[in-house]
Length: 181
Image: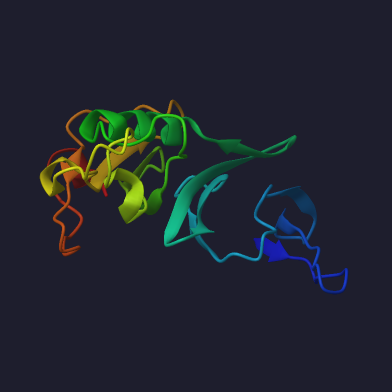
């Protein structure tokens, strides 16, 4: 279970976000989750893996994947790195050095080894050219997309990239690599 300790410290609240076993023993903590921002928890079908969609502010969140091991809680970030690399290929206007991968983890595969998630970032990330020579045409701005990541390796699953409509209306696909979700 995930537990937030009671805050201490007056105006600047200090607390931890802990992972506890069924007996209430602390097995680890979730680093950087003690920032007062909301998070959503999704347990994997593999009982020692979970995901939090950690709100970053400015309408962004990040799908953070964790594994509970005998030595504590380990964060896996390779899916974020591979997702950001794919975002740069799909939308070359995204700044290479000024952003982290963002988006939302949607659903675990039945075996818990893959995660369907959507890449999305702030609307203003691709509006003007870096040299400020003018606005980027709307059809050349960043595009949100859906993908599946292998959480052990971080690799984006072949044929899982699906560009999403600008109107925000879409359903999780059920064909191809999405048939296992």
